Length: 309
Ligand SMILES: [Zn+2]
Image (cartoon, rainbow, N blue to C red; front, side, top):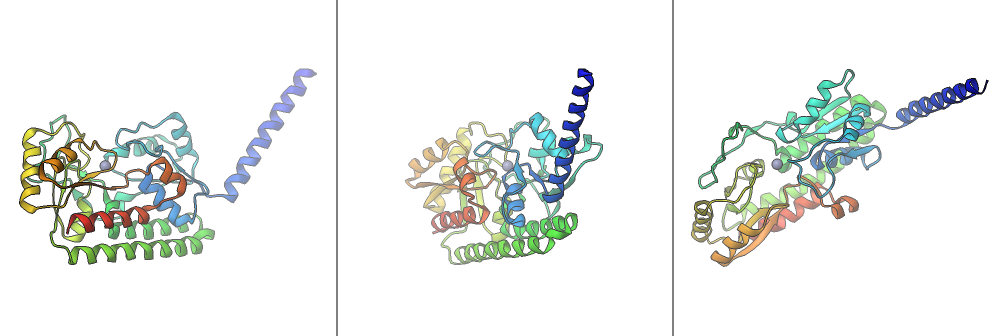
């Protein structure tokens, strides 16, 4: 008898659990974002963070991220997965293709015209570890024009999956797009009136979409998001020569990279070091405060203003 009572209790708990799960999926639309650019786009379109989970922990390097078992569960249970769609989050595709009933998915790289990773004069040669040096450049979000297309398209995707949210999502997207357009116009103005049009990065260079959009030239130590090792003396010497020749006011580097080389070059040339935020991730503090793509791009515009004049 006691056994039977326990069995009934277990059954009741299971039923309750399944009921509440049903209810929760009814009232909310859940999005899993693999990284920060995906999270930022989802937050902008949804008009807040409710129901959105970012898998990449804030403040960490996105290229070396390994998904956890919890990530796999979250991915399998959500309504929509948003991810970059490049080499750095290939694991998302792998998990999705292993699921019998995968959720809807949205890759940023599917929304815009893609560029191949570029190897510019003076860059460190990549060691061939079977890596395709002409692989696609996945950093599509670094161009505000691309970001606008991504936001538009994500709003349409969410609206079609959850029509009741459609109107709200479209309005949120429009509001965000007008902020992106404002920073885009500001950057165009800076470039138009700039004294010089070349940027020197003493780091990796995931900004090909950005410089192409604004007609800027660049030199960098490493292409795309190549695994950054110590650059050779030849690369450092090349960047020092270019910095002198162009008389640049600052040497740039991207966030979360070692400032050593930038400092060496800047000291040699007698100029400043500035950080250009490529928004692969947000710091823990920025993530908590809700600092978004446009806030970060505004700060990049300040850096650009200094670097080009
Ligand atoms: Zn990258």
